[in-house]
Structure formats: structure tokens, C-alpha cells
Amino acid sequence: MVAELFYDASRPPLVVAELSANHNQSLDRALALVDAAADAGADAVKLQTFRPEWITLDADHSEFLIQNESSPWFGRRLFDLYAEAALPLEWHEPLFQRARERGILAFSAPFSLEAVDFLESIDCPAYKIASFECVDIPLIERAAITGKPIVVSTGMASAAEIDEAVCAVRRHQARGPVLLKCTSSYPAPVENSHLVTLEAMRRLWSVPAGLSDHSLSPAPALVATTMGARMIEKHLTLDRADGGPDAAFSLEPTEFAELTRLVREAHAAIGEVRFGGTTDAESHARKRRRSLYVSRDVRAGTPLSADNIRSVRPGHGLATRHYEEVLGRHFRRDLPKGTPLAWFDIE
Image (cartoon, rainbow, N blue to C red; front, side, top):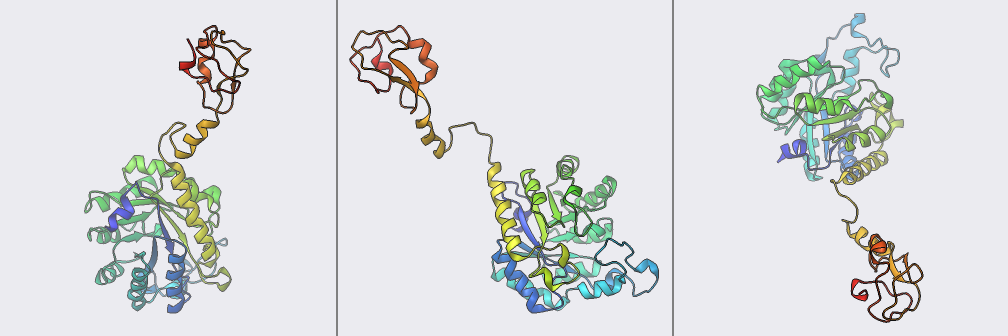
């Protein structure tokens, strides 16, 4: 079931390749991104579903310009940026089909009620609510009422706003959403990740938590994995040099493949609570530990002493913790130097 991919804590984190605007208005490139995600070992690809008029107004007022000078989109009109970034609706089904052919999941982030209705018409299996839409309660409810898994990226949301989003999902789904820690800057400095928030989200809302990461470093994803992240989302591009609205903070295929490998290794390394000697490798290593050996030729009846027994490697003799216990007792039989000491050799 699709829900298990999002909610089953026994699985490694769901690694999701965000295609976003990196299609650069080419269906062939978008299909190639799905292939690249599958080749890189991703579990899923995520699309974004919108039309510019579903998000903003075609207006020239300053409020509709990006005014943050540190933004890669500084000075651009919102409508123009979204028109460039929008994935044509007619491309969705071919991309979903390509993902199915490659054995990975495809789902999408709707940015409006119209987008949810469209995605329902093509049986989208799960929904992601983007961080900027985390406060859009009608949108969240429209997605949640479908009964499909809901992922909510928290971004700039306060605890109260996150609570509203979680409650909106739980009005229709008892399990609630998967919450993603997200730093809404592009690219995001790793020191702004604040990944201890993952545990706080799990504790406060009793839901799975994960990471939507806009950095170019693997570190946040690996740390999040060791903290029990249920999902890791990263942007994927074929080549940052090709440009595009999201290229600057996207991973190239070889980088994404390495990230996927490291995430899976990090999850495998978590394991379970065990103390030494429980693995096959350690059981062999035990034979190289110190133990008690006869250190010179001895005759039956000779007392055991520091002159004729020693703690040395390998570990085939009595454990060294018995050293004081056996001193002064007598050898039961003649033994040559190098014999591993055993209880039946001692009177």
C-alpha cells in the first residue's frame, strides 16, 4: 500500500526527488528527470501542480514582485515566474506512467483547490502541501478528504499554524499528516536546518516527521535519517548549468544517487539496541580476544602460577576473568606449552 511508504517507521526513509520547475518547459526533459530519479535509487518523484492564475494575479504592483535581494528570483513578477515554472497539466499522466514503468511512486503538490480536483481525476496517490500553503486550510482539507496520504511541509509556519494544519488533516484522517521540517530559503544554509525540530514535531503532534531540504549538502538528510526521519525530499535537476528557476538548489543525478546511498546506509547503521558479540563478524572476532594459555611445559600435579599460565591472544582458552580463581590449583595432566587452558585440565 502507498500509505505504508509514508507511515511505516520500520522502513528506510522515503527518498523523494522533487522535479519542481526543473523540466524547463520540456516534456522530454521532465521524463528524463523521472528516469534519472529512478536510476539514482529514489523511491518517488514529486511534481507540482498549478497554473499561474491559480496562485497569483497577473499584476504589476510591487506586492507582486519578489523583493528579497537574496532570492534567486529577485525582481521577477510572481505571475511570470509561476508561468515559467508550471508543469502543463497534460504532462502529468505521461509522467505518472513513466514512474510506474520505472517502479517508483509519483505524486504531486497541489497549489489550489482546482489542482486537487485535477489530480483526483488522474488518481494521484498522495498529496504534498508546500510550505507556503501550510496555512491554506481549505486546500489542506480538500486534499485530506480524499483519504490519501498527506505530507505537509512546515517551512515558516509557527507551532500554532502547524497545529491548525494537522487538525485540518485529522478532521478527515485519524492518522494525520507526515510533517516535513523545511527551511524556506533557496538554497538553505545547513546551519539553518535546526533538525532537533523533528523530534519536537513527533512529540507534539504524534505524527511521522521528515525533511524537505534545499541545501546542497548531504549532511541535513543524513542527520535527519539518524533522527528517525520518515521522508527525505530533495530537488533533482539533470544539470545545474542548464539553469531554470530551481536549478541553483537542486542536486544533479550523481549527487542524488550518492545521497540516496548514504541515506540508506545511515538508516541501516541505526539498527537496534545490541551489545557486543551478537553479529556474525563479532562471533569470529571473539576468537582473537585474550584468554588463558599454558605458557611452559607442565607436569600433572604442578600448581598453576604466574610462571606457567598467561593471558594471551587468541581466545580459545578460559576467559581471563578466571585467572585469580585458578591460581594455586593443580594441573590434572601433563600439558605442553601453548595449550589453551580448560576446566578439565585443572584439579
